[in-house]
Length: 200
Image (tube, rainbow, N blue to C red; front, side, top):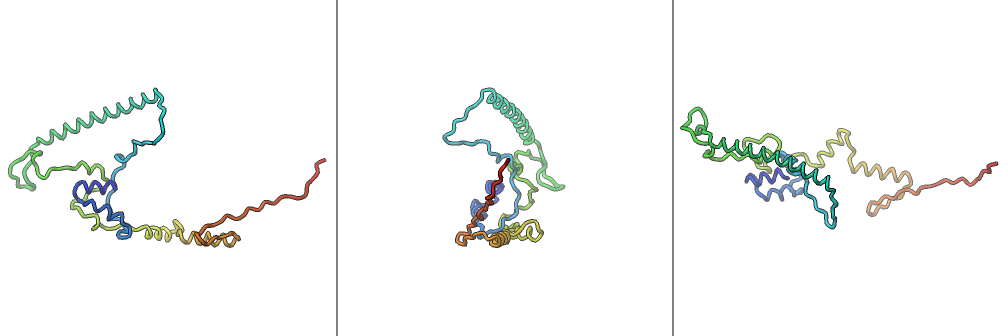
């Protein structure tokens, strides 16, 4: 779903596309699209009501130190990359494309601007010409996938498995309550020896 939000944010899809995709009656098969990478989606901030955490001083100091080092490392890399991008903005590049060019222009003045930040958060190769989601080839639906694995012998069809299990329980004189399809467990029988042996 994050990949869809990126497409909406870039203006390639309308916000209504989310309701379209979640309507499984209208769209039982999802269109093909690349998934978003996982690292921005990691859950790191959890809150639990009515719970007071107890922190050990030494462990807390270790965690703070570790995160400070990680932050400083990433901050330095961020500044270096930003300085590189600033330097590239002043580079003179030929106007237009092809063998014939009309002078040069600074990269910062090239239109349209190259904005590719979100491409780092989506897997796969970006298509040259964007194709709307609802016009793309569709993936197989759930029923089709189940039938595929049933034919290959990977799994048993859930409906057939339930019928076989029910039939087996009937053969074992188990009680089957038809209303609500509730299966009762068979009564356990325990054999107790009535003869007692005396030990001399």
